[in-house]
Image (cartoon, rainbow over all chains, first blue to last red; front, side, top):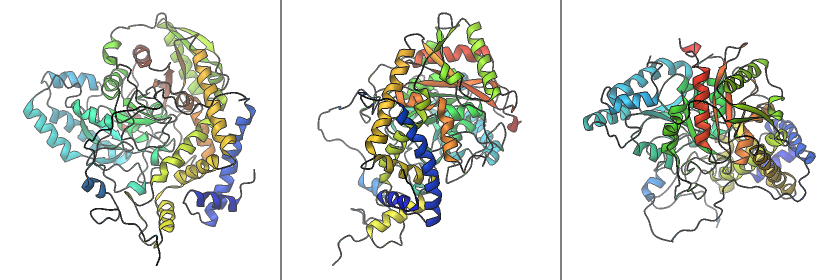
Length: 96
Length: 488
């Protein structure tokens, strides 16, 4: 495993984050430590072991598809950084 | 100071009998907050006026015996949504977020008559073990102000140790209720996965986390568990298993006769400080004196829990925290003129360093080429850890172990070494992986540091009744801790 500054910058970009060169350097060292520790799981033989993704037994719960009141639009938009009373507004995506 | 012998269940009786007014109880807690909050910094917001107004209205109406928490002041960890009350998660990205709805457990507390006094501090998005990762303030330990209260529910634990309210609700993803309870000398319960609805919890590790009570004694914890537990249509992972009367169950057991307590060799032989070993060993002798039998049990994969836990928790975090994009709520960087740039700038500026670290490692372990090596591997080890517990519970009814290998550490001592902080979860994270319940109670004070030491009791899924009964007997036999030293 070779986690360097450039690699950290690439992961950051995948996660929609940006890192300064100093921070990328610091993270690279910490990630080598942490992921190196995680590699200790390779010592465990997991051949044929079914993965356990959730302790819940209710994997797929169905209900009637019926209308019911939830949140009001006004309350939801109240927390938005920018809106026009009906929609969330984001920077323009399609350029002319 | 509010009488230190006064508990939630004692106050409840006084309120129901009309011997004390709701406004008097609320005022006592607000006085305690006034005295202790400037040094502790456990609360992110205090609903002083709203709570007093609500109290006066309740006093006008008179006691309601159908409401088990009528007039009881409570605080809620700020990772849990409260309608018309800020819910920040200890993050700059949600600093101005006010939910339009209550989490199901908050709704249940309010329906039961509880008065919400305020929201407690936490590590940002519950990621941390010291509450130092809060972007908003640093909470101090009531036993020694230079030390951390633990985390991530450190605000709730410190607040309860200072009797700022009569009950608090925290969340536990890898130990975040039990570890701060241990550090602050209070009681904390992590319920079985599915016991308490997660609707309205700000998501971090969805397959690991549960909300649960942090209180000054076990009966108070039982009273709150009965209110917050139960099936919820809004959380498909919540269980339909009936909710017992946890408080009533405590009266059916006065000793530990016939109880087989498993002591995992891997936990008790692991490195822990001598004062933690001494206090926990004494607690086990006390349990034997009360009639319990202790047996050694084997959890062969216990040593791999922390690695498996962090892979899964970080993977789930990276996915859950993708929602913070500056579009629907929270902070947005207003300078960006292009969408992707807006996402990146918003997230990088408003999320703290530990949160970014976890999102990035989570992204790494889920990325093409590494998914099988890390995420799937961790989920397979998780299965083995679950099987270890199931086998151990063939030979014992409950399992006991220390909660943390040492007592509360100094503020600033471990901030530069994330891996060392993660390793502290060695005794706590296994039951989150397995979805099992656990309760931490004070075992005593450490002989060296004078700081509280916790002991935890773990059980099979949905064994909360037995855990609370056992913890209640042990708590009585061990006797109460003195008042926190920094508050005298």
